[in-house]
Length: 121
Image (cartoon, rainbow, N blue to C red; front, side):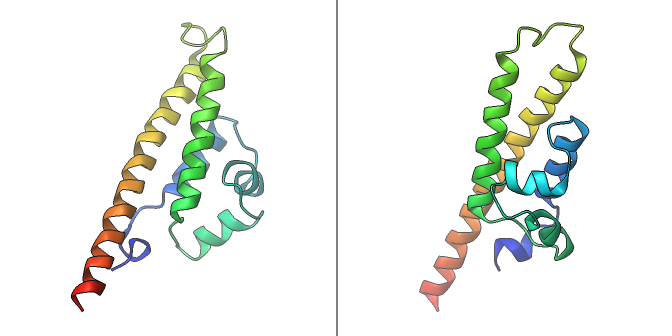
């Protein structure tokens, strides 16, 4: 069984909505190109076809999210009580990073199981 067949939830959909809700991206096209580094229709095709992202896309999402969080930390208003939106966005991105790391570990485990099954066959 491959990762794409096993994974039930859709991390890209959740990531897009998090980015959109926090005004980090404006559209699916911008999310595909600027955040995921893919063609403009990538996100909409993945959602429509109910497919999971590749390891490369997850790694890109992780890297871009970490970079964005780094800019938040450099903001002089970061963690100030009046900067509620900035602080909330940072916390949500931090949770997304944790989830991406879990997904990447899951991809690794599924690939190992698939390799073991091929060797055994």
